[in-house]
Length: 490
Ligand SMILES: Nc1ncnc2c1ncn2[C@@H]1O[C@H](COP(=O)(O)OP(=O)(O)O)[C@@H](O)[C@H]1O
Ligand SMILES: O=C(CO)[C@@H](O)[C@H](O)COP(=O)(O)O
Image (cartoon, rainbow, N blue to C red; front, side, top):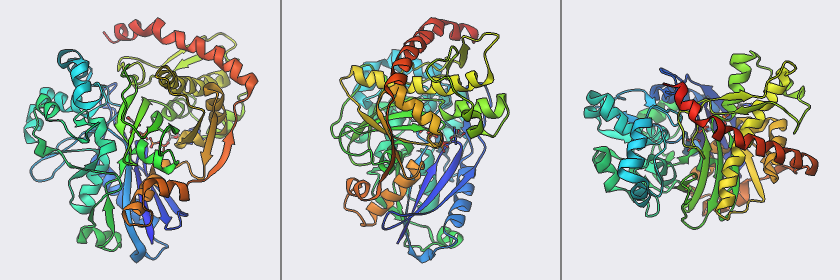
């Protein structure tokens, strides 16, 4: 038997084929455009996700016996608002997780409804990228579109809907909508009322490892897959990545360096961050997790390389970096505003400390370090909650860089475990499909049998000390320039 894992990412859809022994048989990737129609806005077309996923699946399975593909599941970029009308047409482009247009609606939710009430209804407060503020934005700014809404779904749920006709979501991804009561794993009537929507507009909720249907006959024919192929609910990309890196059970950690950067801490018990800086979400293993999310991680390096110094030679560029822990240049990686821990859509990217002898390498280094320091910010919040993290897994495109992995290990002062593939969410998706098809009795068992650590990066005491001093300096920059960010936008 084979299982397909689909990682519906922001930069591309990554598809992974796994056999029932857990061996990765093939990986395929298909890019699609990301639109920034206004500064701070971020959109994609669901039709692009669908077309590229279909093309990717055909390529993925072309050399295997397709009749043996037993299940397909997903890890999807979270929070994106996909709205369909009564004829199942997409009403407008999806508004993504890193879109900052909802500052007014987020402020309304946090101050007028109030953080305490939001926390009581959902276990979280409002962040600009979450789905509920986006619904309010459409209501206020595009009333004609709002009137047409029949179905509200998340990005990966759109794929499941097109593949199977099942209008469903899973608890981990739905946690990020600010419409779900995370503790009790059900929709919040209060939040639906606040957003002016009915519960019928929301998908049926499932565990990530639940089979929710099979391929529609016409889709099966188009893909060359059997109609019996199970479509499995799947998870938000971070929960799926956690499955794919074996971050399941109690007190495990995964750092993802994708377009976003995340710190994911699994827990067998429901818990909330009293500072509201970390999200309290459901996990794909049936339990819970806390998560910090920075909006621009590997995308900062991509921006710096592609748009500014204009090179595709990421590895070569990083090989010239030598001054680890001694850089006088610092970079705030807030190119799309920032979520954890600042919750500030107005925050912006910033270089500070430039002099006449600053080199291109210093600035490249500052970009990579700025991301590592921002990841550390979420670790500091976890530490303040009494959570001690001694080692972490790492995944995402940025984790392909040996230098970045080393920086993370030293800035965080913990061991960093690399697994066989950086494609955490896609592998996690395939594992969820295998659980739903009965190959494994639980997500934990799948992780135990499949995930292998291939390398551990140890912190280096001398560098840890240097980076501790550097982090203290970094931590002073945001509070100093914070007010200026809002002023600059006026
Ligand atoms: N060697 C590398 N060094 C730094 N960044 C990298 C490297 N390889 C890939 N990336 C970055 O990883 C990101 C894609 O990672 P991925 O986890 O697939 O993201 P997403 O799920 O958001 O689409 C891109 O921003 C890409 O530039
Ligand atoms: O908003 C979040 C998590 O809360 C992001 O992590 C998105 O889920 C997008 O992930 P990537 O495209 O970076 O994997």
